[in-house]
Each structure stands twice: as structure tokens, then as C-alpha cells.
Amino acid sequence: MKDCIFCKIINKQIPAKIVFENEDVVAFHDINPKAKVHVLIVPKEHREGLSALKKDDALSVGKLMVNIPAVAKQVNLKDFRVVINNGKEAGQTVFHLHVHLMSCDGLLA
Ligand code: AMP
Ligand code: ZN
Image (cartoon, rainbow, N blue to C red; front, side, top):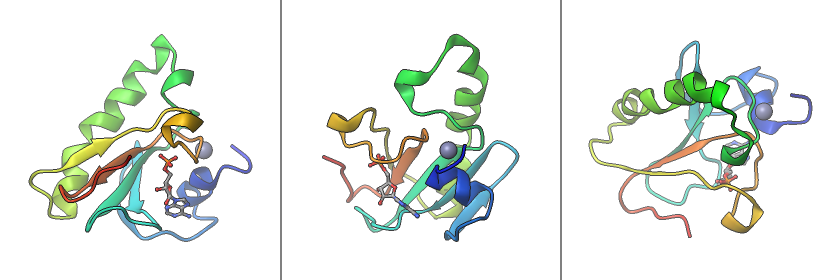
């Protein structure tokens, strides 16, 4: 998706501190961390957010979820918090679906 910052990171058009990548997802450190460890996990297929999902997206969203433990292991998190902001009021600022994976000191308001 043109003009999507996370698509640009996926396509290596802009730099990010990538910690994990496979055929389905990319995970990288949040540029403005809200916890000691704060990474974002994004599906390679662009979706605006949870509200934009259709039934047919079940597989790609499932792939996003099943990769969380592998990313957590990569950044040495045994226990962790996961947040998905959906919509402006909820604090979503980047409209490419993403999971915030944080150490337990972090909490997104
Ligand atoms: P949200 O507010 O839920 O949409 O989350 C977007 C997150 O993306 C925020 O925590 C930002 O700090 C983070 N972010 C924005 N631009 C970048 C970037 N270029 N690299 C890494 N993280 C970013
Ligand atoms: Zn995108």
C-alpha cells in the first residue's frame, strides 16, 4: 500500500530495527517505546486494522497471532502484554494492522 509507513518498512524502503521476519510477518522495535521491550508485529499483507477485517482474513490474522510467541522468544520475553489499538479514539495512529508486544512494565492507555 502506497504511503503506508509499515508497508515501507516491510518493503525495506525505510529502515527499522527488525527483530524477526518470516513469510507472514515482520517484527521491529517501536520507535517510541512504551515499555522496556516494545516491538510491533505486522502482517505482510496490508489491512487497515481490526475493523477492516473480513471473514476471509481469518487465516492471515491467525498467522499474525501464532507468530507472537516466536517474536517474544526472539526478544527474550517469557511473559508479555499484547495490545491492538483499533481506531483513532483508541489511539491507533498507523493504519496498518499491528500487534504491540511489550514487556510487563508497559501499558498503552
Ligand atoms: P498505534 O498508535 O497503535 O497505531 O501504534 C503505532 C506505533 O507505531 C506507535 O507506537 C509508534 O511509536 C510506532 N511507529 C511509528 N512509526 C514508526 C517507525 N517508523 N518505526 C517504528 N515504530 C514506529
Ligand atoms: Zn501497510
